[in-house]
Image 1 (cartoon, rainbow, N blue to C red):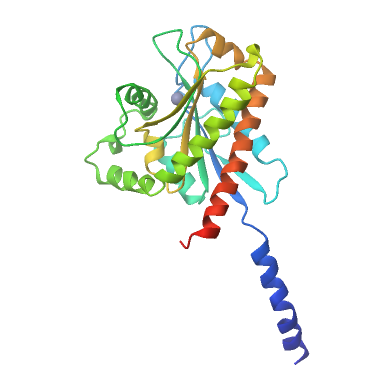
Image 2 (cartoon, protein in one colour; image 1 turned 135 degrees about the vertical axis):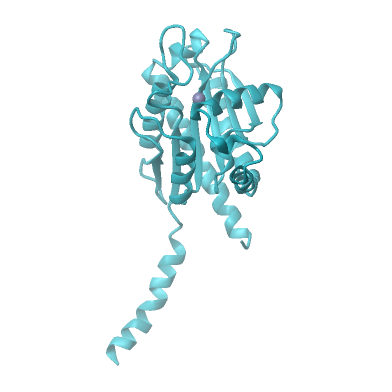
Length: 262
Ligand SMILES: [Zn+2]
């Protein structure tokens, strides 16, 4: 009897606590390429796979700085090894992430091309973005799920379509945070050109069952961009800015789930 009364007394308090503590956020950070797949390589030998891994580790550090509710980060790779795209997608979906961020470095035959681009998934894209997606999709050799007639591809396509609105919103938040910290309010030595938000057919995004963004952080084929990614101050600011954007995205999504019945 006493036990029952105690449970009845404490149950509302326990329920109240559960209602008041917002859910922790889980971010999947994907360092593009790895192992035998170096990605883009600059004229001076800088490899995309090394820059993406370093930035992924830095981003995890900044994302996991104490905040309420906490944000945790899961990496698709934390060392220099090859991970097929399908495994990256599988790991992210199995981990039930709230947001997926894939990090890459851009390359162009025009050496003057510079700056960052924030992408979300679109099965079509345009000629320019299709070229970027084609280069990034090459990282998985000849995997047959690239064939648009493959049922797996179609299922994957549908998976991300469900989150296209949130993915677009997340892209906007990251782009405007980077535009503030690295473009408009940055000293010349840290300034990076803002190339805006774009859409393209990235294989690593299309099977994601969560809002997903791919960031081309800068051009390895541009000497000035490449040099910036050797500066600690620049890399720290870059990662801290994305982490800030992630917290803004969480607030945005939290607000939405308060007002919508899912
Ligand atoms: Zn890449």
